[in-house]
View 1 (tube, rainbow, N blue to C red):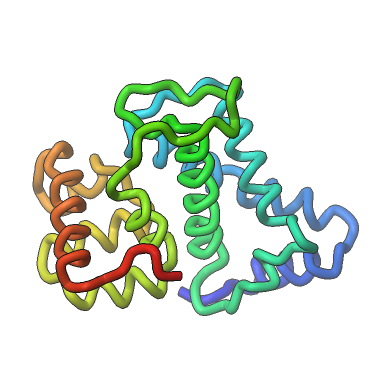
View 2 (cartoon, rainbow, N blue to C red):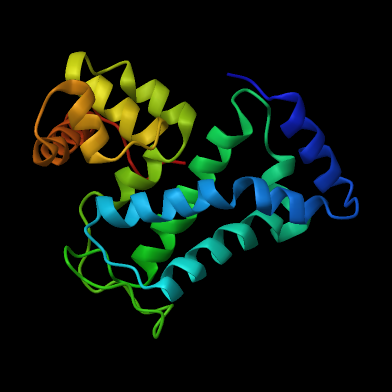
Length: 197
């Protein structure tokens, strides 16, 4: 789905810094950003306080306005604005969670040390980062088939939760993580360099 007329007008108004444009933008996409924050935390078994959630949402919106709305200026209109912003928001949230060193299962995201170093390396972090780019996901999906391709597409492109994916593919929720891990491993074996931008 391409760019809707409503979103095109909103995008133009923001880039031209029209009165109330930014407020309207936040009103329109705050729910989406909140969903991405919750989904990303849930996928990593992290519990967020209201303050953590608000901080992460604020970080996403700050990333959007940084450098004179560079994120919005880089939007090419090849997908819906919501899809593009989902990828942007997820990238910011994952980066922030990893920067805080709280990607371990069951840990609580703490706002007390927002720039704490990552203490335990995550073997999938680089691949996760690469998968935040829609074009890269589409390219990498060519090497997958069947359920693996469907699960990767739903998780990385459609932002679905493990539970939602499990319902669609008819598998238990706790089977989705291992499928994603196997798919990433196949891509590494196929010579994908996850650190290449």
